[in-house]
Length: 163
Image 1 (cartoon, rainbow, N blue to C red):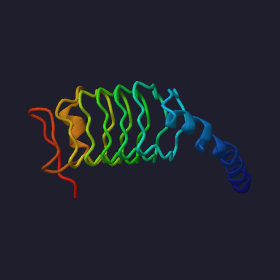
Image 2 (image 1 turned 45 degrees about the vertical axis):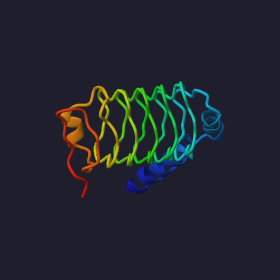
Image 3 (image 1 turned 120 degrees about the vertical axis):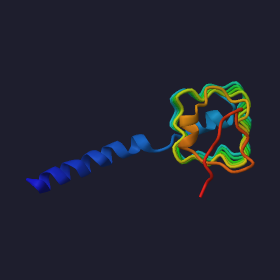
């Protein structure tokens, strides 16, 4: 009986695997500066991109590279940015409502006037990031992330040091 259950689970995982893979055509759309709602951009290389005023709400950007990119006025509501590299990127007026930043690296990233209401920041590294005019950030969210002495935060907020 146990062998049948194991074989069934293995078969199901093989059928489910393609749905987790990135979609090259969707990645190309974003690289061309086009919106892509609920796209699968898993492990996409979006470094050095200029994606202004695009809608990536609900997109799966897990383990993606957005280093040194500009994403001003972008909608990333409910986007999964977990374990992504956001090094030195600029997100001015971006909407990160209910986005997942778990274990993301946002070292030196600028988040001017971006909204973080309900965002999950567990394990995210904001060392040297500028969150000084970000909106919707709570102390509880920041307590689950880390930063350093050069991290800029909204007045009255603190962030634990990265170890």
